Image (tube, rainbow, N blue to C red; front, side, top):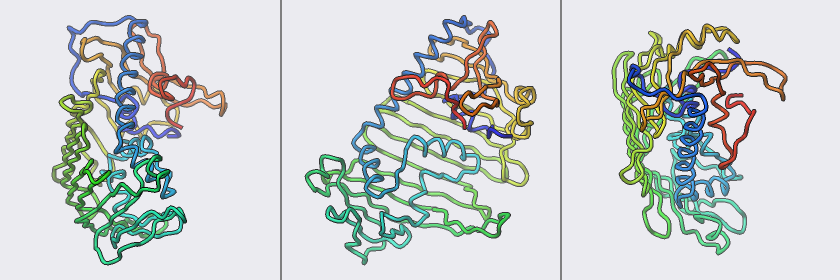
Length: 364
């Protein structure tokens, strides 16, 4: 398929899904009312995201990425995790733990460790202590600290353990180092502002058979767990702001016999105030023809609700979208209202700040 239609791409697009049966007692919104509810719901979700992105901890991580020339975009990284969670690669959580990377011209290897301090004169990180076996990055927390030439932030990665896994690819054997344990702590102005504890058990194919992640970043906290055996796994996650749950899921996965793709999935993902209910046949969906939306729609059955009101908003289906810029047509997810009219999901979910970016597909 030209557009990568995978299960967790659908989840990323829809923000929240619950795989249960439809309650026939739910009220049904008209097309116009459903559009109003979707606009309000997505505004609320994006507002919550904006609040998190404005915390000192996240701003510090973003500033560190700029100092190191990594140009990390956290939103894209998060989407990448959702897209590839079917392989349980934990990409964002482990990217800096399992790979060497350059800060400008300085090679930093988390597996080797060392203390690296930002040099305001050269704009690089200098190795200031090679005797420690853990990784420590000392740097200015934000633009204000940078202007004052103060290295007031520190990220420390300790207890880093990993396994080496070999993959047979078309071009040969590829080796990857996958973390099995790590403890991360961030401090700003000598105050601990974020901790993350990660542990995992990895099989010979590089797939976790158990994972536990606990993160505290006041006022936010997150727990994530994965367990299972054979081809069946369960993963749970809860992301909270103080006492309010912003995002949570409880998912059961059934893999194909080769353990390289999801066959079926059931469970729930909720991001208030939206809820999507139904089921997806992931493997069959991905095997549909490039523009065969009949096949695609035969393998998804997802209804959209406003959770607090138990209000039915519409049904998710694929519709053909014509891209004026590229002058081509391809399938995109749309919400079909009770009267048969529809809007593409990217009309609601792709936003620049709080303004709409109409006409740009979510998937490229």
